[in-house]
Image (cartoon, one colour):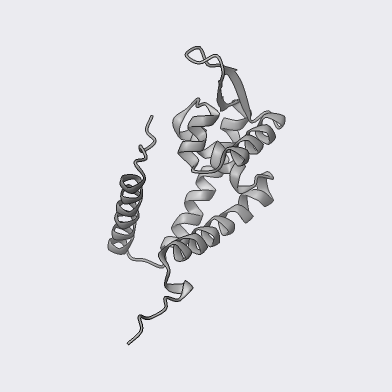
Length: 155
């Protein structure tokens, strides 16, 4: 008997990708309409808001976006005076990027909106399911890191 040919809809990377895109897209509609930010720009702002000043290379690792997307997002955010560059004293070839006062103010406005949207999405799961879901995602992420020899971003 031939092996069952897997359907795309049952393929984990596909399921994760389309779910992530749907969730990100739904939330992005809100902060794009209110703040004029696209997903890459918000991800950079969110990471900088959490971690503080980082290099572009560190942002690539923290966001898992490609270098070009991070570079473009940083350029847009700089042009809007939401982030600023400062010299990296430990590596003269790079700069630290951090939120400006205006960037911090916008981040402070967006975070409650993002958390509200997350709560609306998680209404589909009870508290135990939410905890299990988050734990399972963490385990999958750690497994990916193990398989690729990747180091987890930490600050």
